[in-house]
Amino acid sequence: MSDKTRQQFERDNAPFEKELASMTPIQSRAVLVSQAGACNDLDERELGFQKLKVSIHEKLVDSLDLSMLADIRQEELESEVQAIAGDICKEHAPGVSDDELQRLLDEIHSEMFGLGPIEVLMEDDTVSDILVNGPYEVYVERFGQLERSEVIFADSDHLVRIIQRVVSRVGRRIDEVSPMVDARLADGSRINAVLPPLAVDHPTLSIRRFGKQPLRISDLVESGSLSPNMAEFLIAAVDARISILISGGTGAGKTTFLNALTEYIPSDERLITIEDSAELRLSHKHVIRMETRPENTEGAGEVTQRDLVRNSLRMRPDRIIIGEVRGGEALDMLQAMNTGHEGSLTTIHANDSRDALSRLEMMVAMAGFELPIPVVRQYMATGITLVVHLARLKGGVRRAMKISEVVGVENDEILLEDVFGFEQTGVDETSTARGQFYATGYRPACLDRMRASGVRLGDETFDQQCLASL
Image 1 (cartoon, rainbow, N blue to C red):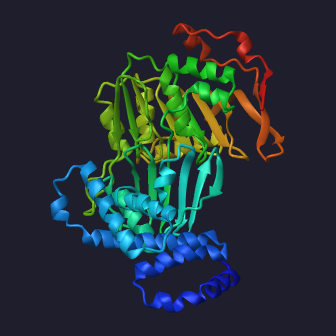
Image 2: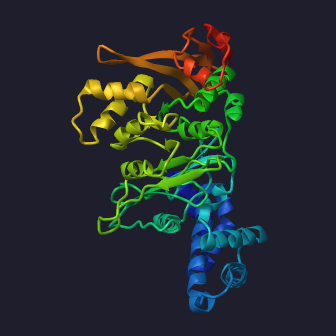
Image 3: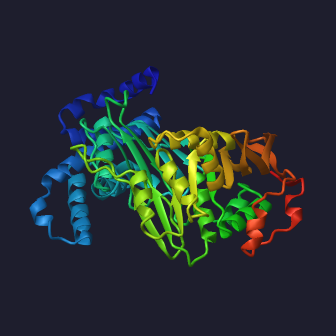
């Protein structure tokens, strides 16, 4: 809010100063909510509403006898709290309109049983990311585009309480001693929160949400993330037990893409998924899901991805799916891929296909074994067959930029051959990236394995050509 607007707001409310001084804090905030519209500033009006709601919420909590509510069913508890909240609002906030009163009751319910101001965003299926930069600055991502939300908090303390509630739901803790947390909600959403002093200005909260129904390969083709020829090739590769590494930057859609590919794993195979935060939602019948565990407050009890990968080898898996490889587990994953667990899948953060292999090589070194570089690269070349690189382009669109085959090792260098690709040619009138998918003309060596598995693709699939323009 600008200084000029704030001064105008204060002048407009000057007649109420004496009246406000004689009221309780709750009553004065109710008057401000009802009168703040005069300044035509939605933020200030919303801030007054949030402060009023917090005051009523605090009074509601103080009035509840928690010992009497311990044995009440959830439905009865919500009904009882709603009735008490209504009485408090009528007594202490008489200045609000009927619409504001109903909104107060709805949001107080969210404060008690939900996630406060962001509850409405969590219920919006079009929102894929909720980014809280501070109490008065909340952004959301819809359809790949970031936009500022009208949602705000009363103050930093209000935001911290909501963060603590989010974190407590998953049995985690966040406070001054442990001011950072990364976890997963019951609906699969991934959360990250940071409190001061690590967050310099304000407490921050990031929530990565996932649709109620996982996207399928057909959905990705329809949205232009890849062409039908590329989809047909990858489906055949999954069916033929060809190991795939999916690379890309943050928000490129790696997890979504990985999840979509798993649909084509034969139903009689046993899968084990390993993730830092369990996000994959496989439709497969025979799946064992495992998730890492951070150390406790005493610094003990940590279970890493590497621990889980090692343990999974004793669980008779047909394929191991690692949500994202990021450390020494890379070596154990390659060992699995080279010892009878072909067709395994994983993702990695990288800028392009070759960078993905370089980062994987670096992660193998993090395992603590001083393996010669030529040995590591040979191990990688025999373990991984395809590298799919994804990118999020201008305008928020996601594209499969390259599908490359790891051909082998020559002169101690891993050889990559591009099979398909996407070339950006410009942007449209909405500043959204435009371009075309193409086939390079290279016929991958893994076609022999596909044919041996009973999967046949026509040679014309790989003819050098433009596949689709977007």
